[in-house]
Amino acid sequence: MTINAAQYRGRIDPPKKKVYYSGSDQLEVGYALCYADATPGPAAGAEQTGLGIQVTKPLTAILNLFAGTVATPNKNAGPGWIEIYEAKPGVFIDAFTSANATKHVTVLGPANDSYALAAKSDSTFNLAAVA
Image (cartoon, rainbow, N blue to C red):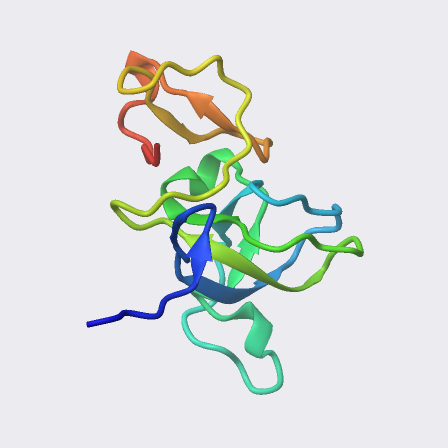
């Protein structure tokens, strides 16, 4: 039996999700994003602001709302619709990091006011660990 599946760097293509980036920066592939603390459910005429749709640069108040990493380059600065790779166990994706990471040792997670995943310390283990 032959299975046809898209490949990403030799692996099955990870799932993508279309989300609304509310910031003003130009995003690069691998940048970490968190869900914005938005209204639950889209309001009439404002589908981009619904909970689980709107993403932004990680900030202290939303570090536990990690959405994923930018999947396709954004040619223009935000705001606008983009695609992200969702954070799912066992899925390999590109991620931008500021850490000197060691495989199977360094724990990475979103950091305040940064698109890079950072090494987590004992004091930040209660926050999202994504890699």
